[in-house]
Image (cartoon, rainbow, N blue to C red; front, side, top):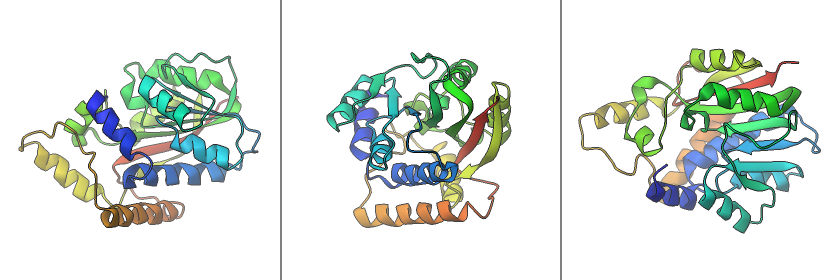
Length: 244
């Protein structure tokens, strides 16, 4: 991730509609797992720690975060999070079978060796442990946003499913996220191909009213996704179990 973009990312990650909406969806999935509060949780790519803080406030005392970015981990520590570490998501410095839940929200696309990362995530999960993973969807949506973020790929559902299955996971649920904004996002991404590139990608500071409206739309979608499987979206997400 470009350093200027990263600084902007950290300034917005707690309140920005997209980040907050994705955390809301991750939280919905965590609650569905009904894990005991004693569960050991690892967030890969924790950034400045907003989800970790939510986990700890909810009583998950054994929540650990890692990020490859030193500024991100420094910020997480400034925010009072104790168990956070600078670490490569494809080379984890934890013993085998250390965690009950691994969360990786928009991390896998940043790692060149996808297989090595998934093998590591499987290694540190206890048998029957859970993985929640979000990745950007659709190769045809590739844009300057992916370049600025140093992405290696975008995903189809099939790609994500096969990658998980090949590395010891049983996929329980696989779907698209951010459905409501898929069509406007696709239109903008396609239009950007004939316009000068935006050096900062898609991360923008929005007026509070607009930000709140978009966040509420995502929260509504997150609730509806429990009942309806929509065949399109800007992201792909999966919940999977480490095979015993």
